[in-house]
Length: 136
Image 1 (tube, rainbow, N blue to C red):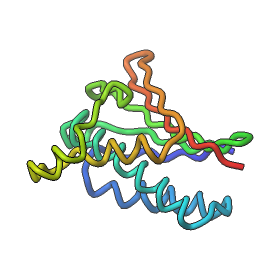
Image 2 (image 1 turned 180 degrees about the vertical axis):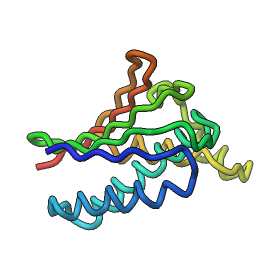
Image 3 (image 1 turned 30 degrees about the vertical axis):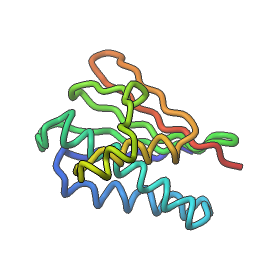
Image 4 (image 1 turned 90 degrees about the vertical axis):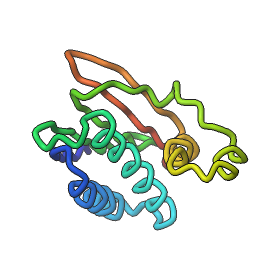
């Protein structure tokens, strides 16, 4: 089962992404704690796409899909912004983040911990980011 949502690239659209994701996970009886973690990861990736890849341009769009496959949930983001492969991101050591009181830097680290697999590719001028979570 594949569910799709298309949003413009402005931060106000994050509410729609969170609600859409939460509703679908609830419909599929994903336990609350697991669902909250998945919504957090989806929100973080989408916020980064809106802010960094698309510079909050409301004329740019992100296509978001949730696909329940046997033993996994796949969250797919497709956009035409500046590409960024989350797998190449090396998060700074926690001590450095704390001592420098740096804002940011924790979101992508959380996404990597929550998800079982992250894929990034480009095809036909589209950036595609897939977050995969193994699920019974």
